[in-house]
Image (cartoon, rainbow, N blue to C red; front, side):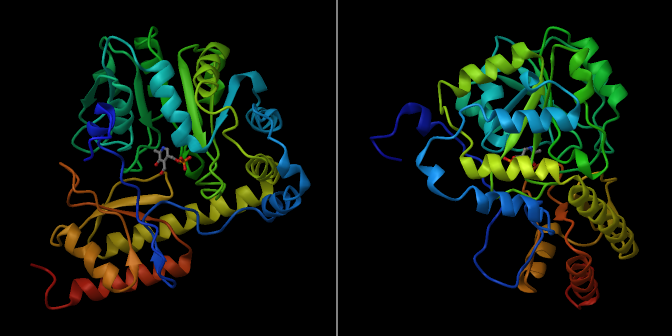
Length: 358
Ligand SMILES: Cc1ncc(COP(=O)(O)O)c(C=O)c1O
């Protein structure tokens, strides 16, 4: 605390990102990155963009990228907004589309950045408890609200809500913006983007950090009705005119062009997830049904925090949240088959060691 801080800063509770350790040789399964790395075409495009042209500002609207995203999803580029990671897109969404008189609604167990944005932008919110099996019951959201937001698949549970339920939600709150955060949708979900043509209150947010393995490039986007996109443009142009640099635009466009690599790597992650789920169930873990590139697990006889610590001592990092209802869970990113095998071996050792089983 400093006397130089504004009252706003004094009142903030910032988001704490998962650790990015400097140690080499760690099995890093804590921040839902993709183990396969970006498309080689993407890397080449970034290298090609590294030159004299960097003296010039990039296209403030990244039109080329909007066209690539629009082309991939079969929508007009005018229905696309791009930003510096989907976190930045989400930030603009909270200020531009979710700040109203009524509180917004999101699940009690959800992306922990949402309440942080609410704090930053003074957006009132109410959390809606997930059901006993950690799923979203859309009927619970059918009440007056200033907007609705949740990830689909949800994070950190990995559970997927069917599109029919999202449609029901859009119909029951026609005067609110419903934001579907599809950071993990490519690992087994179905995108709601085609529904933006029918629902002017639907905004879908996606990222290139997960299935396209470009977390370090920071690119995300929103798809929705032109009026929703215009709101985001207005916020962006009051904040940072050039959120995407030249390298990010080039790398992201190439990532959309390389459909083959995208398909191959996301299928590999899905296959590894299914194997990991089976292996952990065999070790006695309860595993929530995941359609993401991570799984959410708990063991009936092992404290989650102790497990995370024991894994860490073996060079494996996973994510543990000290939050109500989920403090006995671990969120584990799906790595390569080799990383998953290392994890399973370590867990087997920990579970049979004399200290375990208490
Ligand atoms: C649900 C959800 N939404 C959005 C993000 C932000 O992704 P990025 O800012 O890397 O695009 C994350 C990152 O982990 C996430 O889990």
